[in-house]
Image (tube, rainbow, N blue to C red):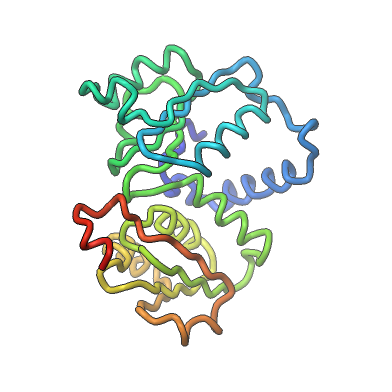
Length: 241
């Protein structure tokens, strides 16, 4: 039983992952009026310390579609007690008195785990620094499942900022459970972190690292594009380069 959603490592069981994909299929086929009201009479907090458009709106839409209520802050770093020095842990201790679940996005890697360590309510990681974005990873693998299937060999290319791109990190770790060959396409300064390379090596997953995609494109079943994570660079000139 999963209480919190903090990392895609929680979904190592392919049976559980298959159940999630099938449930998403079931909901996809329903008209909005038929969605199960599993969150009826519940309040969920969306606590975003970083800017967000798609993640925040999709979470808040889903909460409402499932019958729940929302309390929200879209700039917790500037307009919550964090601006006065309050820790994540203390914020969670307070907010959990008003909500039965919390979605958190934070610029610090490991922040969702810190929140979960003191929480009595479920914590969902909406992105923690350069670490992971597990719900985006689940959505991405669901898209691949619907359009390409997951029961045969897939050649997947990931392009862009693979060093800081947490969505790419989560998708790679999820796809490792299936038959896949990766092509990692990025400038050398933005190549995949060594800890994820080590995981690929540990599990014998084939991968290729290149800075040029022209020869790679014809080989791919899936092309995953990421932006350069401007907010992760300490110096403007490094980002521009």
